[in-house]
Image (cartoon, rainbow, N blue to C red):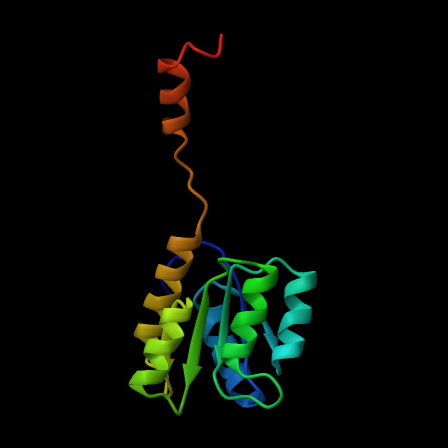
Length: 145
């Protein structure tokens, strides 16, 4: 197991078997995981829990992964979302990434590609921890005095 920064992931898929399997794999990699079997349930989870990343199936009943992405961006702009699909095409992937989806991966899921996408999404969405730029501003600007 690779040592990873703790992150809370939301998995959304209408296939309970896949949710369980993927949840166990991600938990074994050091992630905290919560699951939802629909887009609506996923939105309810986002309203009650702090989540760092959403991984959603593309094709689901009632609300598909792209509709879920759109709703997530309304309430938590910038939340990274990875879309998984067994029915993906290049135009689908291009359209999704142009709308702001972080990554678009096809099923069966390549474990290494998924872990890489998760790590990159978390890295890009992490708040900056280097405040040296603030010190430089205050150290060089005496006009506020």
